[in-house]
Image 1: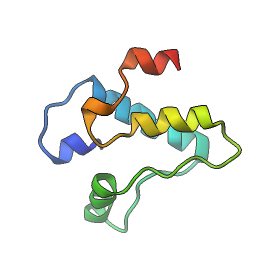
Image 2: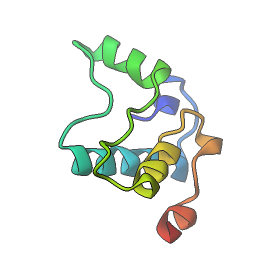
Image 3: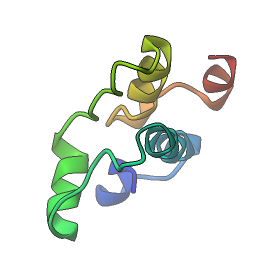
Image 4: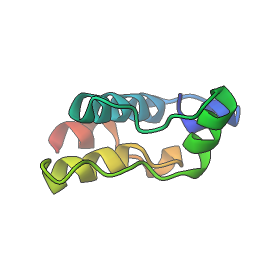
Length: 86
């Protein structure tokens, strides 16, 4: 779940960009970027921790796209159009 969901902020296409970034990360690594021992811990990771970088066998460009898609602040995430261009 995107950070804005935990803060009761309005949802937007930036929320979809976050979700897509999570999916890309999971497809690349076969693991989740944020996980805790319970739901509360997972929410804390989403809110406070940076997304881990992809392993070195992946391109820096892909890692950069995913990192940008997973910015905590929705306004800092790339638009759907910019993600498509990457």
